Image (cartoon, rainbow, N blue to C red):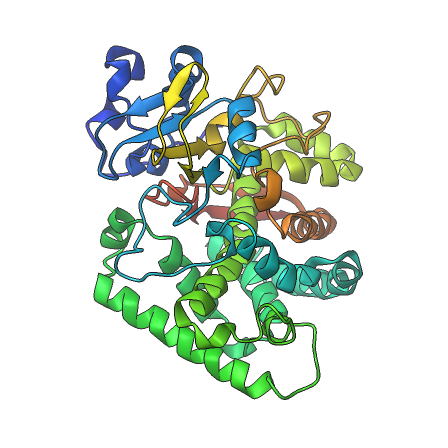
Length: 422
């Protein structure tokens, strides 16, 4: 059964057949397309008719939409032509809170800051994290009510990822809910912030509290022996040892690491449950052969595409897809569209858990900005599904999901489910 989201507010565009409107007017930055899961038809038309699409007017100014897999891969892999500075979002709060971090930096800043923390996901550290993740996943699942309806997002997706974040930051475990709260504030577009009833003053104040909390943790650890956590890694790296003295850089990198450790995994956990519910034949395939879980995890991440886009800024005049892109133009890579590109992915509109080359997707990006924590995200999803299969015959979705109103995160806010025991 396919479940459609029922949102009360939609833009005029979202209510329109994309083939009945002028091509030049299609605006895929419209967040209500994603809130109502209506974006696929708009991207399909762009891929077929105008894969490098210029929109002259939008709430975020003019921008290019890159919608085919190969073109997205090209932009993402050519940081010499397309800059990540000053932001990787179509629209952000940079004027209100001028943050910077390594994902919105070019070399050499990018490489130095990324190198300082990338060992947190080194193979040896992932091996140490695996039993911790498994223990926590088991505990979370064992605490769920069988046969009763509850919100999977709140009880499982958020809880598992937040516990993991608290571990890699060595953040006070009893205050871990703050990490999710700060992550949600950090990625909110202005329209999402308003939709959630969060003012800019509250956002600034809350992120200021985040900075204060982590500055205190930094000061506690700066004279301690090196440890595994991300704060200690920043302290003990020559290129980042003074980062705490530049608040906009310190907070910017904290937000990057919090969001990076949260949104991909959280929304893929929720999206995987929904995908398997909507494709019962794939669920039966999984039940018959649980060894498909690692491959299924990659397919879930492709299918969900938890981060919808990344933005670049053209450093020079260039050409892509026969279009002339001028220096200073915004160029937006729509990963959610590239992951449905039939030219690169066979039967791209289908969810297939035993798909060949399932890791060949865009959700983690390409080039120097490829997601640092991709193996950690995959491991969390793999372990969770291994533990689910030991306990439940089915995770039944019993009502429509509530989706985020965001053009950056393809998020699921609520997913009512009922568990069936083995």
